[in-house]
Amino acid sequence: MGIKNKTTSNELYFLTFTVVDWVDVFTKAKYKHIIVDALQFAVNNKGLDLFAWCIMTNHIHLIARSKKNFELSDIIRDFKKFTNKAIIKLIEEEPESRRKWMLYRFEFHGKYNPKIKDYKFWKDGSDAKHIYSKEFFMQKLNYIHNNPVKDEIVAEPHHYLYSSAIDYTDEKGLVDVIVV
Image (tube, rainbow, N blue to C red; front, side):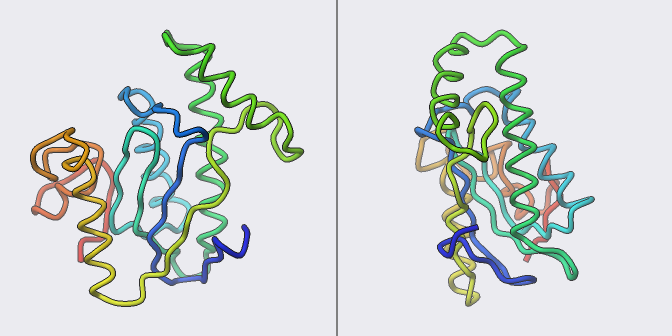
């Protein structure tokens, strides 16, 4: 990862993963469920401590850290690599009205990158911002949970299924989080 996205083990970060060209992939549940399943897998098997998350139409936000003896940069790399392949495969195999256009965009972004074999789904980096105080944590938590309200997807943060906001109302969301 570049210097802009440098992370330190066991430190808490606000992370943003953005789809190339801001393509609105996550307007359909089938793509969001790949993210949900990959996040839960990272929590269960990859050493991810997840405090908050939200899937928007073309990006996702997390507040997370790595457990002891794990590297957050490794978790991010594996998450993005897996979800890149899984989402592209689903676009290719399942009915999708925007298939040609989306695959063209993802192929274009992967074409001149020697690290990419076929398609590049995610922009480089994670825009990692170190969470240095309780106030900054609360600011980012509120930002994440209010994102769907701001975009008029839902009226209340806890009504949005693809977010950890419901976990902060003493109910259970789709992905295990550490509620603070």
